[in-house]
Amino acid sequence: MSSPSNGKSEDQNDRQISILESRPASPAPSSKYSNVQLDRPIQGGARRKFWPSTIKSVLWYFKDQWFLIALGVLIAIASQVQVPASQQELKTTVVTYLCVSIIFLMTGCTLPTRTLIENYSRWKIHLFVQVQCFLMTSAVLFGIVSAAAINEDFMDPGLLIGLIFAGCIPTTISSNVVMTGQAHGNTALTVVQSTLGNFLGPFLTPVLISMYTSTGAWYTKVLPSDNGGYGEIYRRVFKQLGLSIFVPLVAGQTIQNAFPKQTKHVFTRFKLSKLGSFCLLVIIWQTYDQAFSSGAFQSIKPSNIIFIVFISIALFFIFLAVCFFTSTLWLPRQDTISVCYCVPAKTPAMGVPLANVMFIGLSAQLESKIQIPMVIYQGLQIVAGSLLTMAFRHWIRPEEEAKARVKLEEEGHDAATRLEPAHQLQEPTNAPAA
Image (cartoon, rainbow, N blue to C red; front, side, top):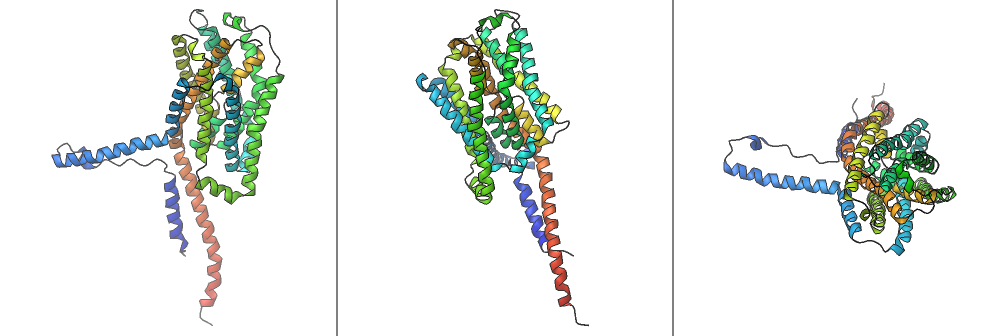
């Protein structure tokens, strides 16, 4: 027995599946474009149709990659105009706390509480991600530093120390969360792994750095022999984690559970998800503004900068390939995307403060040199991560469409079962009396 809701359910199915197609399909080439023996009027028409299609594709690409374009503009601005040195500390504090708090407040307002709790309990993924993020990356970078240090005239010792720091610091938080959402990955898992990594960082990073810099190699001689305590770095890191991450996240979860419909309506109508991307751009701008203001890029040879750039690109894609192929063996695609953003990424926000705390009396010039590999790597990981959002969206689209079809079929079945009893109750009234 057919129900009048079946046609409606099929229409809803078609509409919802079409929504999943985020990228507009390119127009299929007509036969008149492939025919070589065309007369001139048809060729002119082909050209008239070709250029609007090309312009439309270019505009779509700029619209999809607006974040990457804005990033390039902001880095160019930071290289030419910087905040005065007397205001650098205030700028860093305001941007770090305000922008990160906004990102995690929005994350708390959009992530289901049940999903967040479920991801915190997945200890196997925690171990899988953190071992790669701390042990694998630090070991690989220490091997590269050891190879580059064979020739003492090749690399600046401060840059070699900076590479060791880059391998030992935890993953970044803000860019991971924003880009995982843009790539349709498991944002809840990214939040969990990023916060867990930055919680473990103050304990694991100093141990790893001390181990790699206590080898007696010639480049470690530039470090002050007087080591500082770790109490200050613990206080600073946990204060920032609490005020800019956990408090906004809990506040967002409270708002979402107290006003679920209103929260969803506001975020959908005003497209507040874009605000997180704007905040991330401000965070990246302040990092480069600080680096250019300190003169970090002017104190070393151009050949060393080129080496750092190319080795950073190679390392990012090596780490990405390792975590991608190992994740696909046992994780779903959404979780794989999350892991691919967490493992290769590094945060300079902990590296330089940690160097100041671990080594008392670090000179401003050496501090700038240690900062350079981390800042360059961060910029490259943002560019690569932004480009990967398109590839990951295309890769996960079949899985999303399959889930949407299953959900629509279940909703249609539930609607049909609800209508069936009502129809059966009406049948005896329409039957003729015996």
